Image (cartoon, rainbow, N blue to C red; front, side, top):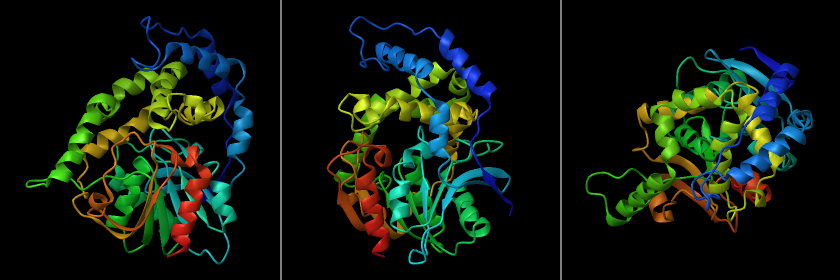
Length: 366
């Protein structure tokens, strides 16, 4: 299969179009006692857009993103963009790192050098329909992405086996790799995880857990419902609207990260904008939402537990309800469980040193 070298170089016309929209944007209003209570804080959004328009330097960020070797490979008709950093001979099994939504390869920028310095070979792809990967012709879910990842790792890159790590949707894909492709995936490391599905005759602890998830979905899950049901409605409204896209996404980073309500306690404006730009500059805002639509309709394999060795890194700032270890062990073959002192949903971005240390120790110990 053809693999081509790749280097980011966004056209000036694309950057000018985004800049024009930032310049002419009108920031909306909010209730008198607004803040973040009703969603995105209009005052912060105005400050954020001012910085983006007047100070942010895409070319400087592009240079940072280009510091690692990048490639594109056509995998079953979809162009997949990925970093490929080759390690030393002592670490013959590569690590596949998978991001989620609304993240990107930007999440791993501070983790890549730590894992590379430890000697690991790394493959860090952009999900189909995200970043600089191509779009599938119609929505695909985690099970199909896991299959594409197998083709990428085995047929394109020639690896006989590999490790997988993921958070958010990347954790679901990594778990699918562990279930459907256990013959080639040696172990997985997750910083997002769930209990097994509730069924008839579920015990009280499992029922309580899914009740907690239900309460979360009621208070924080409206985005999931919208993207599962009508992704085009949102996507068409935001794909050419950098301010609208920023409003939709930065609220999630503030709420899901271990921010204590202060978004820049964990994420700089440059990090947040660069992540947004991976969607806007590639015109992949719309297609990034398709995975939710496909996922809810995809045949589930969650009823089967993950049989391969699994490490769980539990970051305390995660907004989504986590099950107890006892419940998690019904779904995963857990060999390592780490209670982290800090960090949230975007763990690799928030606590890169803690994250990398746990990944290194787990995979080196196998």
